[in-house]
Length: 293
Length: 313
Image 1 (spheres, rainbow over the protein chains, first blue to last red):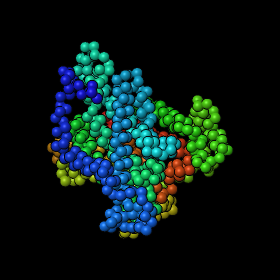
Image 2: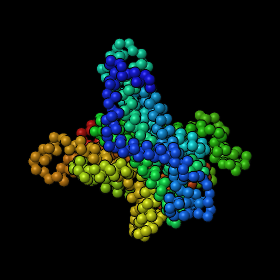
Image 3: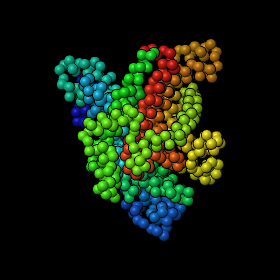
């Protein structure tokens, strides 16, 4: 990253607009509202569990109680406080979303740079990505989790794998366009070494689209984590993730629908915030793609 | 034309090969002894030996792969460990509800999303446009199963209009079939409508700026004809492409929707197999669904040549 930043001082690199972009992005309503809601959710995830009480404490007397003044979101079949569980679940959901976004961007960026810049490796890498993209993400994730045993770590890996090809395609497309730019040709003609061309002239161009892509991946990873939990193929059931809470609520849905509704609302609101922020970022950071969508 | 179709068909072969290799390696390269993983926590040593034998895990990897591909090319997707039935037979038993749900969803989504997207593009910036855009962002954010339960709660439990769960075959009467498939279709359609409406709007906006649209306006053609004849006809290729890509999304959604509505389709088959660790079924189904996806997209690729006469190969 240090290298990417130094491109600001480089006479040929197209980077000086970066300083003003942050201000522009915040001025966008989507970024502002989505970011604010997300920040609130992150705050709740960080400090909430210290105030809500134990998310796993059993209380058989108050089983399946509807929402009330004491139990804001009601209780489940073991008398656990749904509100405390939803707050605790926010941690899992956000952690999975961010982890998947970071890891898949990192791996995808590396593979995309390789495929886009080294011609001999382009076809093999892209054929593998095409194959990976043809396997429906949920199925791939279910298979990966069921084979390697369900832990937080394997769930993150299982959600990351299907996200990688999209990042590779994006980065490769950027590299292929930028590689033909006169300033890159000039750098190569001036004898700049390949790693330096990559880090100074090509990498900075991938940052804006990757930030946008990262928000979308974060949103879809949170959805996929909840789906895996809901289907019983996710994080171990004793951990109160949103998907797990809803999965446990399935049997009691006809008498206690709140067990599914409240975590569902929390999940939908968080993913909506991420997506709205992503759309806003896309409009400000990447107007070229914005015009197409 | 024939050459183009042939080239497209040939181009899918390496993709299918990569999928097959990936699915093959999934079991073999997973950490630990796959036979032990499949057998589960309560398996005896004999169970593990039997499963290892049944899956041919004692052979060297390349030989396993060749044997497996050979069987695959003959249409053999393996045999279920627990029911001892061929995976193809199991797929045959469960495929109807899944195909029906997929078809009703595609038909309903396209019927709703294309007009929505076209109107949004035509009235870009208006209230309708903003509503469509808002819907398309929200559609991507609401989890399929939460939406399913909300619909069951409102339509089936509170209003008691439709049955809560289950599936009826259309061959046993169209009424019960529609009553049972309506909510699952609506549930699964939301994300698909969001996707298609967005793409329709985007490509229609581009076409609306073309000279021939202005000419059509100038010669006084009515708006509806312009929108269908000129705009949608020319915006068709990206719309059809996104429908094809969206099939992957749909297949994932089917697994979840079938689980919410208790529909005995392929999605439920996968889940039951995961819970029972019946790996040949999981493997066979991933292959079957991925290949279906690749073939559908191949057909869509070929359809471009008919949709857009400008495309020459």
